Image (tube, rainbow, N blue to C red; front, side, top):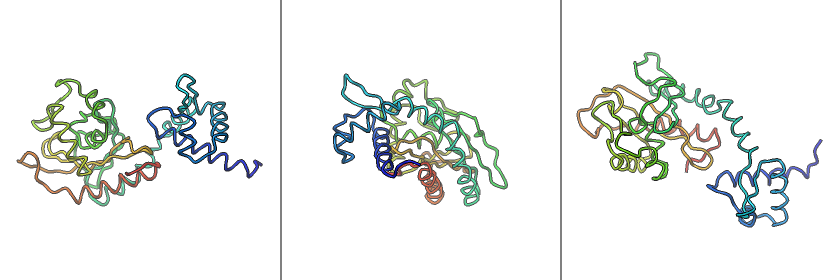
Length: 260
């Protein structure tokens, strides 16, 4: 059996990894020591052990430390077990039972939205969305729910020219300026909505799912029949959006993510 004194060291080592994982770039030992409230000697000892196990990489030229290949391998193994889909499935089924409409889990794939899960009510509606289907992210509620929390430079890279703004109907943002304005509104509101942007006669609302660094990694959406002559749509989706937000927040919690 391991010594009980090994437990605090393990916790401190995990704290170092969690801190590095939550930052955009490498950190100095002094910064790690200060932010975790650890003695310098303890911090260097932990970093040396983590480096030996390949969980941390030392960058001598920068005098900083970043995550190592073992951390990447561990994350890849986690993703291979489809944890997001396994955890989302039951939550989507519960959501469908509450609202009576189709529900989806989607992730961003380039400038497209890739659907991973689709749950149907007892009387399903025929939709173009299905598992494995990809649609222009700027047209879908799920895609925009994710895009709304990405940096401006990232959005610009995904939509570099007007050719990237494909349209399926006459609705939806047709330029980078229009998309940015719409994303700003949807981020302030807390959820995204599209009415007839993907398929005429249908509307969707969506909310993002966040990881531990409050980065959007997926979105949950609900799609229902709806026809609106006005642009933008004036329908009140508040109650439906609240149900979607509730489900997305629960999935965020279950994967160890942050909602704020």
